[in-house]
Amino acid sequence: MKSITIKGSERESVGKSATKAARNAGMVPCVLYGGEQPVHFIAEEKAFKSLVYTPNVHTVVVELENGKSFNAILQDIQVHPVSDKILHIDFYQLHEDKEITMEVPVKIIGNSKGVMAGGVLRLNQRKLKVRALPANLPDFVEADITELEMGNKLYVTKLPTNNFRLLHPDNTVVCQVRISRAAMKAAQEAAKAAKAPAKGKKK
Image (cartoon, rainbow, N blue to C red; front, side, top):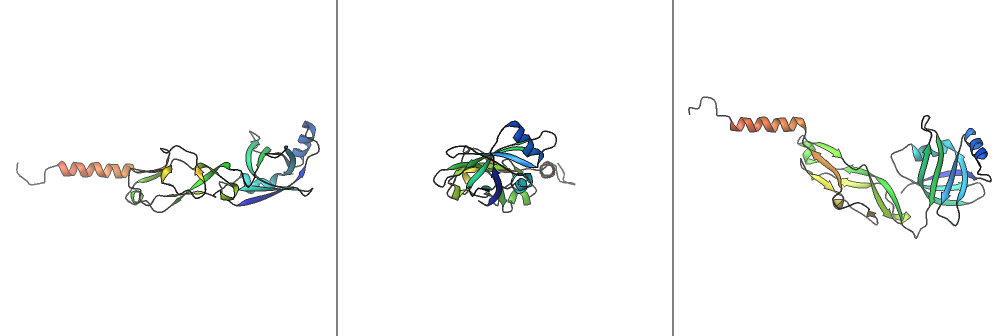
C-alpha cells in the first residue's frame, strides 16, 4: 500500500485553549494511538489533503520535528459540520508483526458479457474490509467482471486474496449485472412477437 508522509510537531499542551490556538493557526490537532502511550502532535491542515480528500487509501508516516517517526493509518477524523474544516484526527500506529484491519476500494476490471449485451453494472460494495500485516495491505481489491452474464452476481468468495483476508460473509455481493429497462422491453417484445400468429397465415 502506498504511503503518505505527514510532518508535524509534538504538542506540549493539549488543553482547550492550546487546541483552539492551533486550529486558528491553520494546524490540525492529532493523536497517535497504538504505542506504549498516545502521542499528541499538530500538523498543517494542507498536509492532509492527499490523505483525506481522496477515494484512495494510504498508510501514513508521521515525522515529528524531534526526530521521532511512526508508521500509522488514519483511524478517525472529525470535521466541522458546516465548513468541513478538519478539527481533529486520530491515527493508529502500525507494527510489522501485527495484523491490521482496513477498508480498501474495489477496482473493477474486465468487460462484462452482460453489460455488452445491454445490462447495467451495479457496484454493491465500493470498499471492502481486509485484514493483513502492514506490508501486505493492498491498495485495492480487484473484481473481475468479465464472465458476468446479465442477471449474474459476483460474490466476495470469487475475489483473489493475496496475503490478506476479506472480513465479509461469503454471501456478500460485490457487484451485479442487472437487466436494463431497454433490454427487458426488447425481451418482452420478442416474446410477444414469438407468440403472435404470422401475417397471412390461415387458421
